[in-house]
Length: 109
Length: 117
Image 1 (cartoon, chains in turn yellow, green):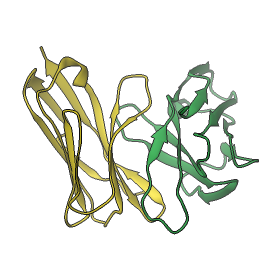
Image 2 (cartoon, one colour):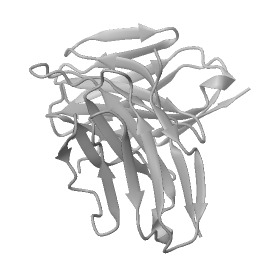
Image 3 (tube, one colour):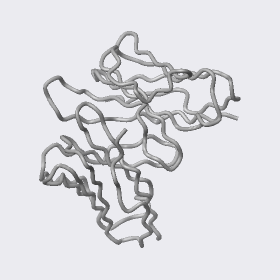
Image 4 (cartoon, one colour):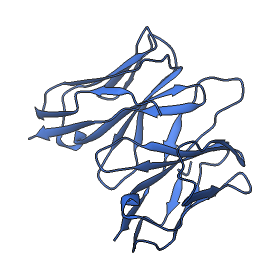
């Protein structure tokens, strides 16, 4: 199945810094989702995007649905230690969800 | 609203044994998904149900994996016999997937971590 290109693969940042990650696809999607996964747990939905160009915030998190419908971006502002985890993007194409390879985030206090 | 429930959370078996996982989706969600997640990778779709019918099982290793959703609500995924490479987290997810609407949101359960020795 199709896998989305997610970058960067990993990030090591200082507490308080902002974080940006993105996801690209060769196909057009109708929905973009961003998840956070902690070790030993299932992915938890952070933000859902349904329209090209849509910009949505959830606390310190902001995500955008790319205008071409082939990409999406997630930004985390003023990172804190509990932001540590793996972030996955997912796109809905047809009736199936496709996932990125994940971005591992480490926040150094 | 209750989330997606899965059990057990952990399972350790020896190779060639069988194992079964259970999932109860969010109430009212027509579509149920089973994913396999190998450490360090994103979820890989094994099978997708809409109500009690299979939408996609193209990546399900049918010689050893089976899944059912008999009444269109909860689902069971079985592996028989298990191999070492089946060690992974098995995630269940559900979504509304309303007919005629091409947007959707998917919610995951906590997963079952399987270790095959």
